[in-house]
Structures are given as C-alpha cells and as structure tokens.
Image 1: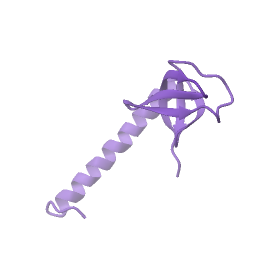
Image 2: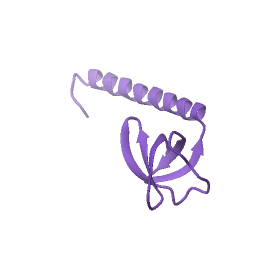
Image 3: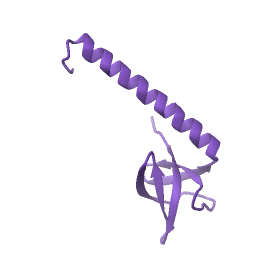
Length: 90
C-alpha cells in the first residue's frame, strides 16, 4: 500500500524543487511529476519525495485528521499488547 501525505508548500526553489512542510517536518520534493503549477501556501500530496498532485486545504486537513486517528489507534493497540504481555515488547 502506498500513501501520499498532505504537505504544505513553503518555498519554491530552482530546478523544479519545492520545500514542503509535512506534519511539521520540512523537506525538499520534486515537482517533476506535477502537471500543474503550484505556489507557496498551497497543499499537495507528497509520495516518496515527489509531489503527485495539488489538493485543497479542506481535503488536506481531513486527511491529516484521519492519519492522526489511525496513529492514535495504533498506539493504543501497542499499549494494550504491551500491558497484556506483562510489559514485555514482542
């Protein structure tokens, strides 16, 4: 399964590179696969270092909310397994 993470464009650099903020982490991403222009402040979907498409802010926020729910559920499951195993990690 592949996931594209919503990221906000914070800078456009030379050579078709954008700096994006992904969950508080800034990284460079290639715009080579994007078939439309993108500007600072816009939201994009990032996958393995490539911007795949633009998305609107509402969609980005909803996706980030869902990712947060998934991560919390996984953490709760890990904590339950840890407790069930007497505190020993598997």
